[in-house]
Length: 379
Image (cartoon, rainbow, N blue to C red; front, side):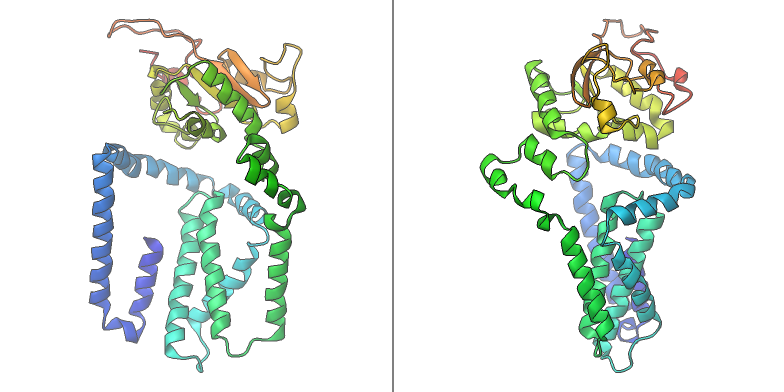
């Protein structure tokens, strides 16, 4: 919405568009209402509307506040994105000054139609960059829209440029070469997997060889899935506490134990919601809680290490203080590499008004909240 609003405001500065301002505004509002009605109708008839409202009106405020409180770490996060998106992060070094220059002044010899397109495209690109930096958490995927817009802006600017210096041609050519060198499509280790991909399909071994990050280990994931199939796990009996394990729901075609699918992230980004999250987990029919031993910060080699207590125990480097916190305080039923399946104790039968003060299965994580003693007991 914010980039679209910025583009509309920019159009008000153009004499060629100003006389159509009410027509444009009517079209934008009508289109927004149409899409809103269709989306709202889908949410309503699927039963998701109350939760959508709760997320938008309540949860999102804490999400944005958490983002604001962590601005001191933002330099590191941006640097991380620059490194992880290399060499495409170079696009902004060229696109941002180009967009600013096009908004301030353009070549007088350029025709009016191209000037207008360049100004509106520059506004869209800069507004989207600001939205990503100021309003969204800096996950990798939020950086792709402005990168694509930056490429489009530079490409169209080059197309409209009547004189293209050799230096710019050299810079553009060098970037294309660098992008190809860094691209997965030119890496011999990836290219040799074509035959295996076509013959075997998407196996855990092939996924591990193609993966850009070391977690989750897809072969370990398949072993965990086989174990849970052997246990005849049903809908709502599995909690994937570590976020990278949610793929198991698709592996097994099962529903999660609660609506808080990303339990670890939800508890981290929404500390005020922790009592509700943990209460929902306790009251769910969950039988198995899945964790990744890398979640507390262990390296792959540390997380895979087998300690003196055997394969179904924690590795030596695992933090001792976490072993008394949920879900690490639950018994380990199965382990494959860094992935662990915890067995949730069977729930005792209580009357409707009865409560239990059993602390052994009560989620209590110092990592998330220092006041989990306020969490209601299992009901």
